[in-house]
Length: 132
Image (cartoon, rainbow, N blue to C red; front, side, top):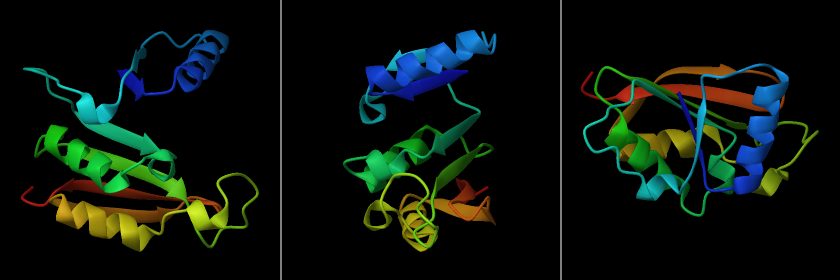
């Protein structure tokens, strides 16, 4: 399992959490996912958790995930809901709506197969290739 982030600080935090919880099956890779090349390797799933609102180009990030995702695989995209109570960052104006993310997914060739409101603050979409 890989954790990919362009932030050394975020990966350092994750590594600390991994040590604290004795998690040893995640390899941290510092890179911009838009530059990621898997060569002959394939992924079996993807999780984009609370990252799209940080991305310079969230639509491009979704396109890259669609490119890397085999037809049999699914991805989960989790974000802060714009209607949430904003107990934590990001501020409301930086939050992405489920409709906006769904639209970017459709353009990338992904379909939403499940939507859930995880809490007042959070929601998630499960997506897969449209031709699956």
